Length: 248
Ligand code: MF3
Ligand code: CO
Image (cartoon, rainbow, N blue to C red; front, side):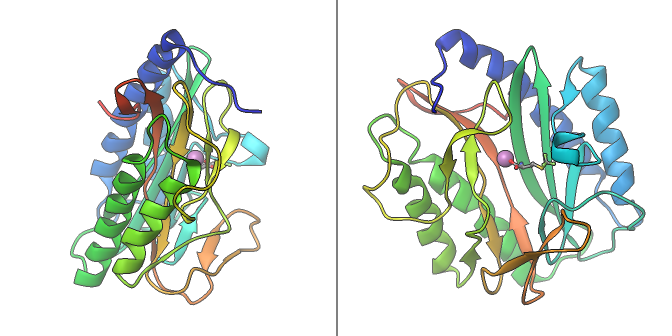
């Protein structure tokens, strides 16, 4: 069931989203050779609590951390730990928080130190794919329009969109209906209405779209071992078009 949000609810989501954006970019700035993934997780949790919010992922379905840190061939849901970041790593950071009973969810991918040109292209393409998808988040558009925009942009770079994981509705809960695929056909799927709030979150692989889950039951990696990137924003459909809630 899709729960549309009132203007007052979208204001509350905007507060949650602004805090999330601040923490996520703070943690993104910390990414550099020698930093451990656990350092990033700890900083994220401390900053979230300082802002009077709570981590959304910690203990969600048993997830053991505040932040997901997915490095190189890891696509999503990488668990922070003792791993030390190295120059050239592609580092995806996914973070969610709840503030005033509303959830916000966002992800960025940053390069660590000196980056290979193709890895910079992977990161840029994934970010551009997210913004292409967000461009389709308008009243009267269809859900398939979002995925179509993401997929078209990504495949033009010879890269692929992950199909086994999708974006989602967000608001009173971290995951609400509908599912928001990053692939699809324009003009198909449900019509987008004012008050719809969704997390658009393309996961883009440099090689094949195939992924699998590691033995830790969380970390999703590419089957071919090539690198992957992930960007995500929480976005509302408003009378004035898409409103990105997870930015300052
Ligand atoms: N942004 C991810 C999602 O929407 C993060 C969830 S990870 C979990 O699914 F740890 F919370 F499960
Ligand atoms: Co999400």
